[in-house]
Length: 112
Length: 119
Image 1 (spheres, rainbow over the protein chains, first blue to last red):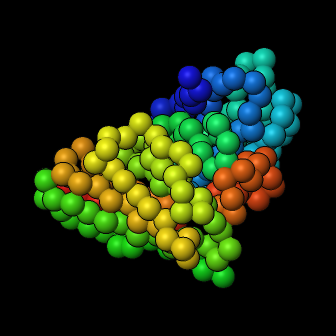
Image 2 (image 1 turned 90 degrees about the vertical axis):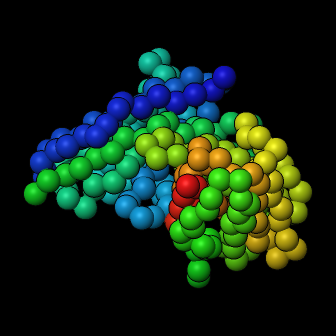
């Protein structure tokens, strides 16, 4: 069945370091792909998305490219900030409507 | 506009008890979905409701049930609680279940969740 696999955390970085969080997926066809972020004590927020192969989603300095050849959607940011500390989830939809399959999440901790 | 609101924010129950969690969607949203997020894992889909009808169900036992009211708010009920039911329960709303997830603004808007602890 459809699934999403993320690199395990926690990831600890210093401020201004480069971030990569790996995400690979298994799916029928070419679904949209998403990154959600969960700040402490909050629900999930959509960070960015890509709707087709080779699309690059971007938001708040984060980027991810939909690569069908490697079935990957890795999240990157060139210079992280303390405020980026959160848990990041890769996700894809299945069936119709508002159902998402999430990866297990990767916790990011950015130190000053 | 208010976002998705969930109540209560925290709850402690004993094994074998019953619990009801509540969710109010964003105004105008007709679909509500429930997710269970166990500590250290990603959210798992439980139910989706649209126009008071169940549109989808995840791999959860019959102890889990839900319903949607005419005002589109929703309740999630869990009977005979087990220790393993301890989790963050997230509610998400969207305009309708067929809204394409490829739209620019995520059609899924999440609440902050209810933290359930079963002792």
